[in-house]
Length: 244
Ligand code: NAP
Image (cartoon, rainbow, N blue to C red; front, side):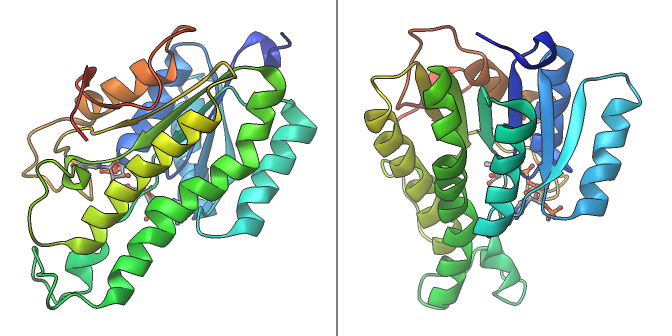
């Protein structure tokens, strides 16, 4: 197997801050070649420089997961310049419910415009789906891949609560995508799983959250580096199977 610069290659979406940035840092510390992506080029390049300053093997590429052209520019770069992608972390995510509800943090399904759900789906589900459509063929070609989908306990059907339908429905959606992809990829050495990072201190989680980004990233790093024959099509939290 040809490995870029002697290293496996990982792509992380929405990685200019928060959990995605931490995942890039930790994968690079493990010796992987990391492609840090973001929708905003300036913010992404600045984040990438912070890791390069520490001599970590990280490079930058723009990708807004809502736009097919942007996604295909990244996959063309991977095909032409690198020839592979071993790990994909679908981390980019938004929580548009509160923003669209005039400050009500837990808006009801009765007051939430359907457009809020559409907006959440665009980034949290259609985004990862299109990113997989563009990148997984490279994994199939090399018969190797690890895909981590950042989901949330708020997408769990078993304990589904009221309020915030945009975020909740989209995170249930990404869990369905995990199942569909794992079934279609079962003949390849490609393992795909969903995970919940817990309530993490980031811009999305807020400073009142109970976990540091390092704790939020831990299960993602573990899933991104699973050995052959590891689990696929499952939902995890704290490295343990989490009920759908
Ligand atoms: P965050 O700090 O808000 O970071 C989200 C990242 O996603 C940012 O880099 C943001 O870029 C990027 N992003 C948003 N839309 C994008 C798009 N269309 N294309 C590319 N990137 C985009 O959130 P976080 O807490 O690190 O969350 C990371 C993941 O964990 C999300 O999927 C989230 O749903 C999930 N999660 C978080 C928590 C928590 O408590 N924090 C709990 C459960 C699940 P900009 O800087 O340009 O906005």
